[in-house]
Length: 205
Image 1 (cartoon, rainbow, N blue to C red):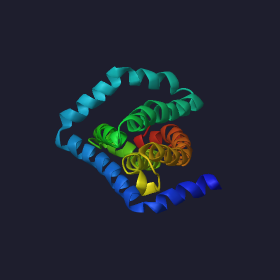
Image 2: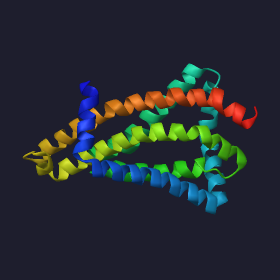
Image 3: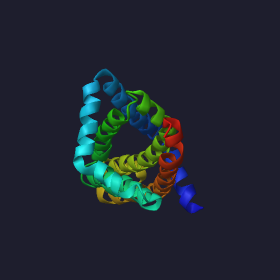
Image 4: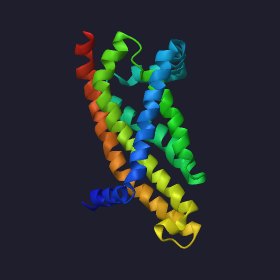
């Protein structure tokens, strides 16, 4: 139970910052969707770039096996997104991961924008995927925020030096990463169910 209580205590200790990061993240998604609606060519260009970048081939290679597809989703969310875009930049530069991932989130919004009937219908079940997975990203971003804050202002966590503040923030990040990973697993399982069982009937496939 400590794996649950400790992250909740960390969030409660700075709830305002956690809520601001929620607003920043979901706001960035909506901004991306608004940009795609205002500039349809932008959505088309990003979708084409996504397909041409080899992502389409990866999806086609794993879509036939639900377990492999789910593992791929989990790997992309954790290894290809969270670590290089949020965690690693924040370990080197305070708050850098928040800026990098916010830009990425706008890009996600552009690609997922309901610009046509198919995209709009697909977004109905996929909205829950976004809610689950972005809550996982938000937990990690919140940890990156705490790392940056205690690194620059160690006294905010009762640390005597920036070095000790850095490691105090790193501890917070690690504790928040545990429920984030659990949410990523839940999100991957739901996304598999979404792709195989929810989207086809909605699209009449």
